Length: 614
Image (cartoon, rainbow, N blue to C red; front, side, top):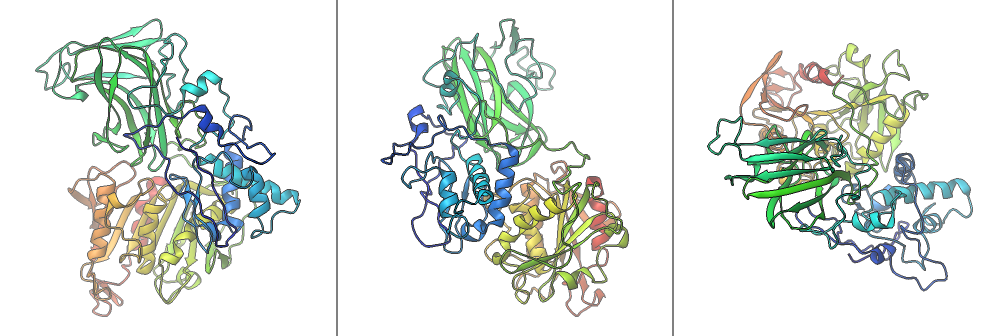
């Protein structure tokens, strides 16, 4: 793997980063040498920092502090919002784009990334000038960058043997075969089994299509044998018609946009092919972009495959499919890890169990400012807390985005808003667009993540119950953030949306959405205000989320709201509904603003529909 250096700018035109991608595709793999990891030699007398010589504390705490600092120290203005899945930022305000992958040192005379940020980026390029607090902030930002890098920056204990065997290897095999008895181990695996089979099958299961199935034309396909030496042997007696007819399975959890690496040792009695995949049994489709064909050799070897989650699935399964060739295959040391390396420590906390609150950092703290407060470059927001707000109770959070020509404070007082009961049991946030007259648009895209972080840091929020709704232009924006920030938002209810300029929510395959959210799209059958769309945009948005969330085209009435239809077969917690209406500005059926009115049942419906998360 070629190693590239990164150049950061302090909101000035100048050198830009090497923006070539280094992420490993699910169907490809990359081999990394220890010399490549160490990085290029510097001509400076200062030795280059490297993963091997300078361990880095990439704890979740310091990385999360660095993320907040990045957003609050003008980095967001200079470089744009970070795409954590890609490990990059697009550049903004004259600042260069950033690429966090593969940078052992900064190309500035061998200086460390921490020092470069402290001396060249902080205080709009003036540097910290010895200020300890400023340098600590720079260290946190550097840690955040390093946590997103594909290089092994973090201080993960590993022997030299382990380090050489745990880097991404060829989809066929690595160059050296680890010993079966010793193995590299599966420390830090995301699976709730060690994968070492020292005491049986643990939580691995098997499937034989020839037994216990209606289609049993080829009975007794397979013999599964646990080896007391610590391995599982699968003997395929009869060739079947599909790889999935013989499976070794383990349940897991996959999140859209995150990278995962699957590592295992394997050997076959004769060279043969298998399929490796991660799917969801609700649809039996891959959640990582498709299965990988792997050739298993006759020597015990280490295999690694790096995937990117294509959708969020809490019921995902790691699959080894062996049905189309006969013979013996033995597996050992099976582990799944976040990132691009075997045995990598996960920096991502596990999701809470369904129905369990996920308290934010603001719990237990004095609440932040609630009046109209500026954020970013031209946006602001108003916070409405429950009457008897309890700093130790994690509340649901609702973002409500105003229509064109309104603003957050005015929109918060409208007569058709959420009920008093709702407002006493949740936190409501009413943001204001940069251009009130023009409504929400591409200039506001970068506002949401800093706003979300500020609200969850300053108030006690249940992060498992975060919702967004909005009317007209605000509906556009809420429909957009459910894709762009679906890892933070639980559900949405856009009302009378149209396509957002620069961000069309019409093609699921063309958007790198994060997570899967509950979506309820409300739109006028014949919207005379949006003459160019006549309700088509709302229908298109509903179709976008139907496809994205794996729903069928069959529908049923939403309980209590028969005017709304819910698609069947969607992923759990990510149901998609649509609510066509004929409301105008004067009420149901009114000709003034026909099809573009705000139905008076909207907020009660959304409150009721999100009760399962509260």
